[in-house]
Image 1 (tube, rainbow, N blue to C red):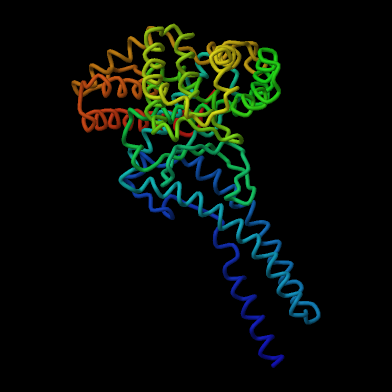
Image 2 (cartoon, rainbow, N blue to C red):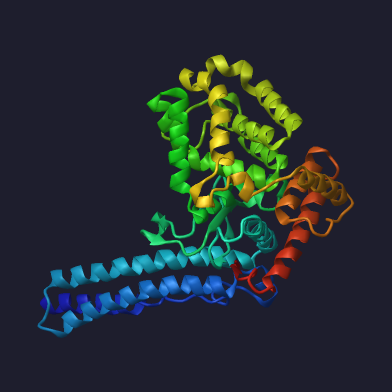
Length: 434
């Protein structure tokens, strides 16, 4: 019986030894990237960053394997010792499996029919970072790997910021921003104002103003209300409000229409309140963006957004599941919130305000309007930034200048060409250059 047990344990060790180290490197060929997919694929630098992370984990795998085999070479170990050392090695292999699986899933999508649309989303993300580089040189330090977009079946877009600890990876750091897009949204450019929101999260993190924004907002709300509960609540919402407001600056009024589209649901969903949610209750969220449009100078558009939202939900407010104190103070607080986040100088922005770092001028909207009309004729004028092409697609849809199919085809083809061009330009295809 003892010999049979030893035979089993030796086989178990041989099996895990075979598995250890098999997930230490990814290549474009490993994930199915064909020559025709290369223009849409993540850069060599993204593969290198993924492999650097896999290499770090692999070194831990090999150390655990060495400890296991070293113990076996000593005096015959007990079965408990073998199982314990084996479990320690299995833990490291699990880390490798999770990291490898994430990168494989993200990279391999660039060999599917969605690859051009994903490359278009990458082009939008790069443009948003470059907008900050242009308006405020020096705020984003050094070259940084650009965001990579990938598809998932989740309901809404999401992002995983650069350097954030991912529970999916058992606490490993994310080496470059990942932007998740639902499958059916990636080919609908008029809805990508929501993507601008996700890019906004990454900009806030990379600019290093996360904590400063929260503290400033809490101080402002407390001064305006004297209420600790409201202070905590609005402070908890600071990340999502920041992302909404910077999306307004990146895309203009069209980004608000995209978000309004995303948030418009039956009153039972919109007029509800989750006390621990990081997102403002949907009913108030659109009014926050309308106030931002007003402050940006788009008075008529801001009024239209407020009026439309009120027509949808105001009559149902008596039955809303939103605390009365929150509703009663919102109209007074929202201008404070928008002013503090978007219009007050921040130390982390070199004493500039968000509207200085990501400016949006009336001339930008005029160019978007002209691009929408050109889009209806099947082309995008040269020089329109990708983020504004997204806005033009929204304007074209709402004004019924072209069919959704025509808008999607024209915009995605244009953005893909821009992305392929930039991928061949040093400093843009690989990193977000200074």
